[in-house]
Length: 121
Image (cartoon, rainbow, N blue to C red):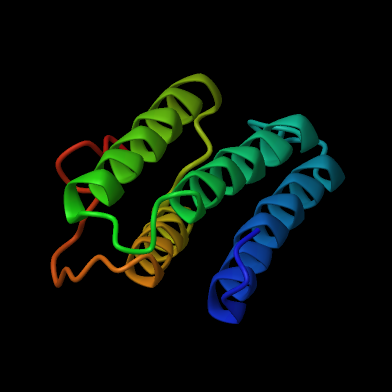
């Protein structure tokens, strides 16, 4: 993942929380987790691919180039959530934080929610 320790911490908390919820559901005979480890890994892969794509941009990348990567990751997460129904409020906040921090580290200067125009979760 991205070298920014804040991003790594948010990512670990997000994925750890998803895994903990999955385990709690598995322990309750009246509950079934809506997703498994494969979906957690898929979410991690989507985030990692986004960070790698942004990291490959030139250091002086135009905001439009960074926002194109934001759009791609949000659309990928939309499709992921449509299939898996994983993203709730806490996950949404963590995902938005990661997306924003990666974009900011690449040079994007934005005060608003940069995911909102594409986000369905």
